[in-house]
Length: 218
Ligand code: AMP
Image: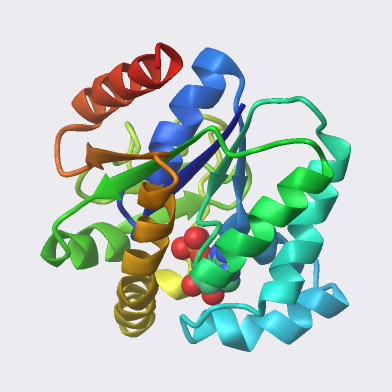
């Protein structure tokens, strides 16, 4: 099964993706994470995209598709969940064509709906363990013991460069510009389900499972 999560940065896609991995084994492919890894490893690709990402703008489609093709060619038949991809209508069309090459289609698209004013608060409070990459939040999901990662016990954290306020604002503008056309593209293909992402994480999760169940019984 191929699933796509649409939703603004900070709308909780990553958290729900983790639950679906634990429950059903969906591999979570976040193009943001793949791109950040390239930057971390200081690959040629990483060096060329660092400035773009730090400015909150979109990376070139060709670069993103190089990474996506590697995923599709090595995970045939597996459950995959794409998060943050496709990002625009061009990517959505090219993605359908690429999936066809691997005899696959998108099964369902979930659109995480959230009130925009809440996003600045959510996004600028995020911090990440530098060892195991677990994600925390100052307000909503702090570590049990301050300064110590719950998962691996490490005591060093980072804030993503693109979670800084100036960049967050730009990312949200870019998202808004492209989201409506993307939404219509999948609505026309009867693949889109809306999910209220403003609710408590556990309720969002329960509602997501209901949506998936509904989709499977169609
Ligand atoms: P995210 O973690 O999904 O919020 O993505 C962080 C940043 O990675 C974005 O602001 C873009 O610069 C870049 N990015 C992630 N996914 C894509 C994509 N599908 N197309 C272009 N750029 C992307």
